[in-house]
Image 1: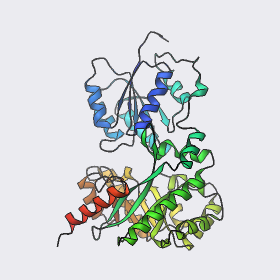
Image 2 (image 1 turned 120 degrees about the horizontal axis):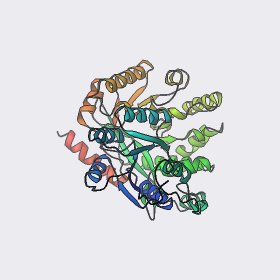
Image 3 (image 1 turned 90 degrees about the vertical axis):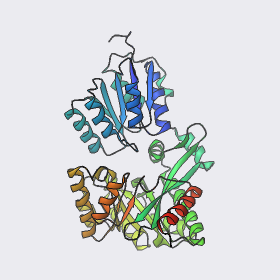
Image 4 (image 1 turned 135 degrees about the horizontal axis):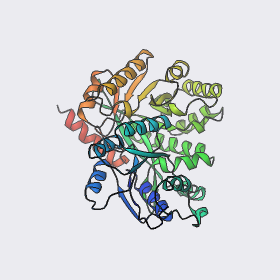
Length: 403
């Protein structure tokens, strides 16, 4: 290894905290120059502005606007010759497929990193470069994203806020519901996305208390909106780690009931790729949750391992088609075919079908033509604070429903 080699790394991620965290790890491991970009377009600009070549790209796949796959296509067209590492919180199979795609395009992918990123995984990547890795660094003080004590303090101080992303009904164009998304209001990093803290919460056994609080906050906000005359429903994400106790239906029933909100206005979203730890227990809990009146949504549909079996046995009321099967579907025949098949499958099972991740008008119009029930994504609106959502909703209804 040439210890005199000065490695230049460009990190792409739309999460401000993740950019700073990975940059910090790289510098601890001996990388002298770290560049950052918050989306694909910014990444292309940074690359075009360089006089000296960038040796390594660490590229997230999921980014708004130009995502990681589009970014890779662009740099392949520009004959980028440096090494590439892909990282994301998406399903491992999806990450692997992206790696194969980049390789087919002639790019030099030397590995993948799953989130949350660790100092050990980064050190292993850097060993493949002519880069001095500081093995004498005090790696014990390096944190995997956030530590347990920080999470506990944030929970005690109530530093987790909710943002709301609307879903629009295709039949009427009206906003019918909102997805409630947790954000950590961090003193240093601003709002931190769930990818950066949920894994720690799950690993440390705090996910049940966290989810109960988020469900309660979501129901309290819905109660306010219902009293204001807004005809809305909400959806709240539930971790598979929550499905470890048979009294979960009663816990959730009480959380919503205490807020004077009708349970049938609340849908719980569960990620498909994480289903199936203990099938019998999962089926028991989800079936009793349905009996309580909750809606049940299978989230990120199509990215798991047994989609047909899951739909056949689990008591879902809604299917959310993952953005990977919607983004660019209007231009790509294969993506369109997957989107169309997913929507048709959901309708066969009698489910409410939501297409998420819609960012452009052409994809919105296609999803509408293909027969989905609701659409969610940046083309409609980004996640917003309660006040921002009310203002947006007023403007949206005024613009679209003039009399």
